[in-house]
Length: 573
Ligand code: PEP
Ligand code: MG
Image 1 (tube, rainbow, N blue to C red):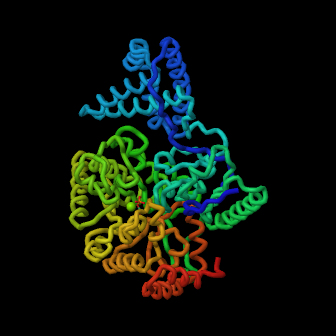
Image 2 (image 1 turned 90 degrees about the vertical axis):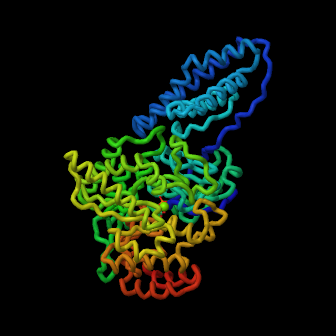
């Protein structure tokens, strides 16, 4: 048995066979062939198998993810039967007497370069389709296994170097029991999504892909951040027991689903949920979410090959607002960038994407994208209790510009006779230290704050949230972070505004008592953390929490803070 340590990214225990999601080795050499007809026939066989496989993937995607996501595979199928691509490959095999791998790669590369150079988004997308299809056909020719996560039909634990948010979105919850990656941190978006999908995960193990073979028996311990490879039967038994105990604990928490969130002495706070798509609403209701504190709208823009239309967005926002039946829904405008890429926007690669042209910065420059989203939101606003917030605000000027554009779109819609809610609260994410420091000025102009600790911590500590090598610096309980949070909450309250938090820290057991003590009004977290948080809050009084907050704000290290919290929560769970 081998054992790996990593970062506990999503609670729970998974026991299943390993399925490695790694790029196959598609290298080959150019050779001359004496029988080109045989090569052509190998080519046609590989095309037929690829076609069959893609049809299965398309059908699976259509059922699980919807028609627009399946459209990508439809485009791939068109490439596979395109004579303009296939004929030159076959001609090349025959006229140059070369192996099919070489003819395929050379011809495909020629088309890819040509299409990529065109100043036309449609043709650029075709270049990406050809690249994907070429890989698939090459894999069949070289007889190497192509990874097809959407075709998984047995229980597995996914092993990958990293998973992008769109890879994660495509995981089938019925079969993918857990995952483990070499890189990543607790607040990488794949980890956040694992929590909302309730898939146990351990990230940042550094060598999962190197140490694990396909088919190995794996235990993912998402509670402690451990991965066991080919464990002994005794260890498996032990983990089955831990899994059963955890399930029992969840049943206890589930009894609180319809309860208010009150401290022991009756102080009420609001527990909200973070969602990425309307599909997540079910989890919010099942876990007793009192609001949606963060709707990450960028997932609407991902896993597809063009921007969503105003109509598509309007439908998604309306569905969420209606589904929450008048409870607050805080929708964040597009926050693309960092680990969330949109390949079809074709933005230049940046050295520091987390510090680059992203989120509100992009929206203020690419205004058509921003305005389309705002119109969709404004039109949906009459179907519920909508609040809008801008991500990554660093200066008051950015907020004012965003607000002016929102106001302009609102007036245009009203002039056209469209209905828009009378008052929509407009707030900002506080995730950049400059904004936290200047919170008292912002508080005069915004309706609310939502503290985005995932980014606020990485920018304050200068420690990339995705990089497991600096994860020791990613310290939510560092007094420096706690002081910034206090400044934001106090600033909001002194202007009569509310302050929430939608970073992962809001659902963190150690942080919750401190945040209650600091006076945070709204806690927004993965839906699956809500019931546990509600149970925790019932075990201490507001004044105990205030006393704790007063103490920890004066401390010097994370370790002291953790010890102080344990002092008030011990024996209370
Ligand atoms: C944050 O930064 O805390 C946040 C909630 O936004 P995201 O995780 O999407 O960057
Ligand atoms: Mg953020």
